[in-house]
Every structure is written in C-alpha cells, then in structure tokens.
Length: 494
Image (cartoon, rainbow, N blue to C red):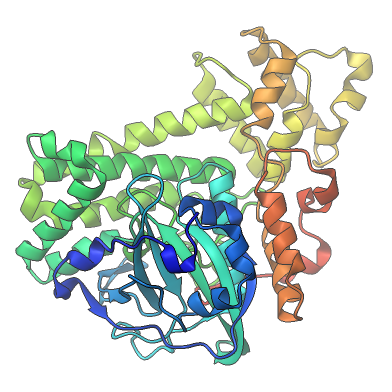
C-alpha cells in the first residue's frame, strides 16, 4: 500500500489552463495534531491506515508539508447564494493538493481550512474544529448510508485562535472526491461570456467522468440530462433519510451529483416538513420540504450557464424536465416503498405514502425511530397482543389511536404481497438506519474534542460506519435529542 511519500499523484485538473485556478501553497498551521482519521476513506486511495500514527501525517494534512507530486491550487467559481447572484466566489479556504489513483477515475485530495487564497473575500481562510468535526463525521456517515458524497480522510487541529461568533481553534479537514467541480464552476464562465473556457470545462467533465455523453447527438445536452438525473436521485435520497443540507447554493452543488460542502446540515428528529436546519436561512429557502424544488431551480441555473453549448432554450428545458421530476419521483417512491417493507409497486401506494408523511407531520414522530421500529413489527398480530407487540413504535407517539389506524392500513398493504416476515424485516432494517448523525451526537463529539478528548469523535465514527446494524454498545446514539440539546442551532459558520 502507498505511504504518504509514494501516493501516485496525477493532477488532471491542474492540466487545465491557469484561468481555472490559482496555484499557491497552503498556509502552515502551527503545532498541528491529529483529531480523527477514517480508515474507510484511506482505503479509497489505498493509503495504509498505519500512516495515521506517523508524526508527519498531521503536518501533511495541515498543509505544512507538501507531498511529492502534489500541485496545490485553489479553484475559481461563481454562483447563486440564497437565490441571488453572488458573482465570483472560489476556494476561499480550500487547497486542492492534486489527484491520486484509486477506485474509479481517481480521487482529488483537498484541504479545507488551509489558509487564505485570492478567493477568500477578506476572510481568514481557516476552518474551525467544530465545523471540521461535523463535516468529517457527516461525510463518512452519509457514505455508510449509501448516499453519494464527498469523503473525509481526517481532521487535523491546532491551538491557533480563529474568530467566529466566539474565539475558536483552527482545524483542517481533508476531503476526497473524484472532482469538486460545481454548478457554479460553469456559471462563472457563462457570466463572463467566456465560451471557450466554458467548453473546456464541460469537455473536461465529459471526458473524465461521463464519456458516454460524448456519443450523444449533443454531448452537452446529454451532460445536463445526466446531472439532472443524478441531482434528482440525490434529492430523493436526502428526503428519505431525513437529511437537510441547509445551504443549497449553486456553488455547493456537485456536477457529479455528490453531497458537497457540509455546513449547517441536520438530520430530522421530530418530523416537520417545514423544518429549517440553518438559522441563517431567515425565509426557509432551504427547508426540508423545499430541497427537491431547490434542486430543480439550481439545475435551471446550470442549464442557463450551459445554454451556449446546449443550444436552443427548448433543448435546455428538455434535458432538465425530461429527467429531473421523473427520476426524483421514481427514486423517492422506490426508497419509501423499501422503507415501508413493500417489495412491489401497487396502485394506491402514492396515496399511502402521502398518508404516512401526513401522520409523521401531525404527530411529530421521530423520523429515524419511526421507520426503524416499524421494521420490527410483524405483518399480523391478534388484538390481545397488539399493544405489547407494537409497543416500541406506540411508545414514541402521543396519539396512539391515530398510529394504530395507520398501522392497520400498513398491515393490510403488507397482506397484499404476503411476503414472509423474516425476509421483509431484514430488508427493512437494511434501508432504515438505526443511527444517523443527529446534531446532539455531533455536538457531544465536538465538546469533548474542544476539551482535548478526541475519543468521542472516533466512537461516533465507529458507530455511524454501520448505521443499519444493531450495536448494543452504541445504543445511546439511537436516542432522540436529550433535553440539553433543545437549544442547539447551526448556521452558515457551522
């Protein structure tokens, strides 16, 4: 397996013209120390986890020591933020070290929080320990849930002070992805009417990641259609696991359909379709219920940027409309059917799914617990034993009569298939996680780390790496928020 010194760098993005980035080294971080590292992420680049223990490891991934073959740079892009054109943005606190060989087309290694760049816009270019731990844990948790995402190799901390709402300490999170190109990367060149650069970037994405688009009559329309399908699928996966991104600006949308740029994210606790996980989002633009619509809106921003390549407005519209809604609806229904234990698609399922989410909304049921407890219920039960059999689910709701009525409908729907309980229950447990990164769990790891104890971060990582498994030693992480977590909030600085 490669060591730090023998990682095979390629740096394909750095072969694009200089207009796409600025080459510059990271800013050294004083006295760095390793907070946490992910063996699963290391395996993607075939890095031996034994390297985590080397003193050099923290220095490399703090940006203090460059690896042989790396070519650090910061990419330029633009974008819409909260629906408003923000103009030029870019990697204001991120340095792309380069790309190393691995599964698929390779993995770019990026340091987030490694110092100022020309795109920092008067900011300090640093990340803090709090936000870095949140991104590290959620990146790996989402991957374990099977949801497309950037990955996180490690978090390196330092006692260097950083001012946010209060004085915090600096940290760098190392991210991995096949590419960090965003919708806003294309908006940047379209806004400047730089068609040559726009075409170069589109060709780079097609040739590197979507070569099948090259065989289409219009490769750029095919690329837009591909992004529409992948974005729709991602939105459906977010919705059906109760994940909220919190800041779906076009510069935070991956051209590869990955979950990108973890900030004020959250997982649903007591269900509320209107829940806003980002307290900086005054108008609820990025609420849970709005995410599919925003994904659609963002695709039109991308489509507008690509219009000079795609052609007629009708071609842009067709690439989006012929793919987004149908893919979202099909993926969403397939995943919810699986969560409910339905193997087949039957008439009336859409209405039943609507009734299910209506029940969750009216009773404010804990989203993750509802589906996990449901996974254990039998398809048939006699009246004498019903209360005891259904108790785990009934105990988390106030209106048990409403729940019982819904369960009757659910069991009637199961009867239409006649699927054996053991088979169905195993299938449901495989898609209904017991553990997700609730805000209070992340906060417990952060508070311990801020006090110098990094073991809780490692413990949470170990738990969330197997979110569908019964893990008695981590039972506390399956609980809804404790009372002390009621005042927790996250913002764009998270």
